[in-house]
Length: 310
Length: 264
Image (tube, rainbow over all chains, first blue to last red; front, side):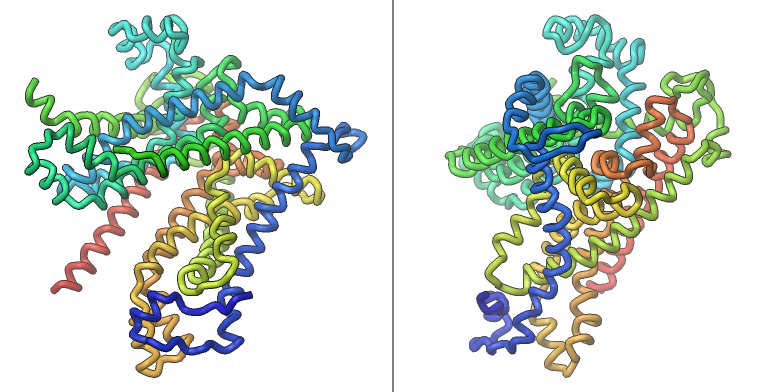
């Protein structure tokens, strides 16, 4: 173990050119501070992953008990049976993430640059819905999107539903129990996770950069494309991750707002674990989901981090 | 037309805000409804019945108080463990730092259903009885990372010279911690605590997997979505929204007053 010392910059800032050599007791302080929390995470986060890995290669039944037989076939079988749900999950989560970005960006921009003294109020309004239980809010969408509701009738009158039905997003004049309802719920549920990181990174942008762009005869659109958006990239990346990852595993929206045709992989995992009690398949499914998400996230971070974004 | 183009951002932003607030408005309006059947989805008639008798539904207030207790204990656990980790990470350099940072980041970057399922396999393998304790363990686990992140942000911006000054004035380590370090870190700890409380109180997915037959408030709402939703659920939802807004507004007034007295 290396010697824990005070952070260098701090020592320098404290005007302490010669770092004192700490005593053994002092050296152990950070480890004592870390110990309880890290043990908690190891036992209740890391160890369960190991158990789940072992469960995924077991065979047997609930009555006879499960045994580790290194039956990797379960992964293949599970994927073959449920690949439509995987595709659907990624499609719905991806669409919801994109919608969150399109809807969230103007609001984050508004709060960061145009709100003035309304800024705090708007931030409260973004966070406050969080506090009404999200299940209650999701159920409210059932009322909003119900047949013959104001919203649905308006969409119908504007012939929006004709287009979405043709695209297969809705069915006739129904919105509830269609893919559009599920995506609408997902978008709604994860919007704050997009807006807050976007706002944080937009707020950090120096206003003088906008003035400089204007002085150089950039139009507002060009200023946005060449200055604002590239500088907000950290917020875009963390916002899309915070939206996409939980959305891809969500089963609440698909259950409450969808139908049997809109089931996502989260619904399958939930029912395999809690209703069918086929633990190996459920464990394999959840590992496949984790692997897909981690893979996509890694590729995305690489792309977003290294490519020239201007 | 020109006006619309000039204010495009404001219009689009406010439309998004309306989209975000709409369900809360619906929840509020339908808390004054008198539904015809078991489901409170269609407007029938104005009534104050639900507000007069918020606990008139069997088991609902029991689940509510259980959720409040759970959230309180989960907050205490996550704040104590998380604050310690945050201090260790910001104030000290040691070898396992990178590994520990990723161990803290991972729970936030994992679909919740994966964590929920893996915890369940652990508890099943250990033969643990699912209930209050397994849910509490799970909630502390997933709140921990968020507390660490919130406290870390605050501690990082702290000037270590203030603690040096306290020591120069012959304050002992305990005195320095209690009278200097803790008060300065308090806003970060408070933010972490608020976040942990909200996350724990509202969590459904992890609870759904690990609660056994224990019913928290989100689980009660989930069940009622199938059996029929009592109006009282909307009353509780509205009350939570109003209380949250009041807490945030009060918090801002306190910080504003502090700022004013600090500059005066």
